[in-house]
Image (cartoon, rainbow, N blue to C red; front, side, top):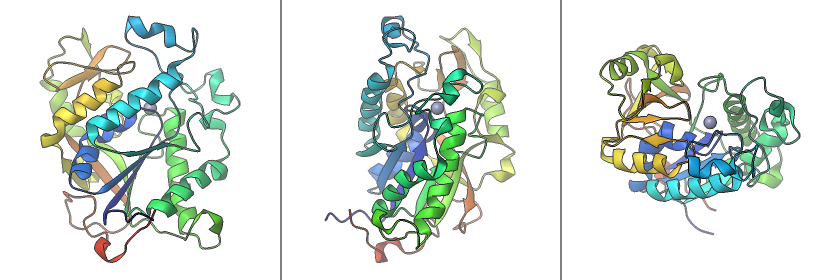
Length: 300
Ligand SMILES: [Zn+2]
C-alpha cells in the first residue's frame, strides 16, 4: 500500500495528444507541485492522420501501426510533463479510435463510439475508486468539437463519476468515492479571438479559424484559469512528443495539426466548473474549495 499525495487530479481524454494540447501546462504544474496526476486515455488514436512523411508508413491504410507508435509518443509526452500515472481505459487497445463522425470506423467492433457506456465506465470507476481524485477534468457534452471519441470520453467520464459514488455499484471495484469537482475544458472567446488577431502563422501556410479550436465559449462561462506560463516549455515539448499528430513552431506560441493550419498554443488553460462548489469567483487553482484533502488519505 502506497500513500498517495493529498491532492489528486484525474484527466480523461480520447486520444494521445489531447491531454498535452488541452491541459499540458495544468498537468505539468500540478505534477511539479506534488499533486498526484492521473491521465486516462480512452483509445490509442489509431485513425489519426500522420504528419511527417517519414512516418506515413504507420497509417491505418498502410502498416496500421499508428496505435502502438502513439503509446510511445504518449509516454514521451508524460515524461516531459512529469506525469507518471497514465493509463488506457480498459488497457491499451481495449477501445479503438472511432475516426471522424460518420465514417464506417464508428461502428467497427471495438470502436470506442459503439462501446457499451456502463461497461466502459466501469473501467474508469476502478481508477476513480483507487485514486480517489478530488478533481476530474474532461470535455463538454459535444466533446469540444464533435469528434465521436471526445463525445464518448465525456459520457464515460461523467457516467463513471456517478457510478463511482454509488454505494450499490460493483463493490469489487473498490469503496465508493465522490469526486468533489468536475471541470470541462474551455477557451474564452475573446482570448482566442485576440490570439488569432496577432498570430504569425509561420512556418505554417495558413491560419485556422476560431471555430477550429475546441471548447470555445463566451468568457462568462469560464470559472477557473491555470497560469501555466512557467510550464510553457514543458507543454510545448509534450506536444512535440506527439510528432505524428502535432507540429509546434519555434517559440512555442503556435502549432498545427495534420491540416497544417496555424493555431495559438495556450500557456494559460481555462476551465468551466460543472459540478461541485467553486472555491472563489475566479479560481486560480482547481483544488480550491475541494475540502481539506490532507485529512482524507488515499491508498493505492
Ligand atoms: Zn482527440
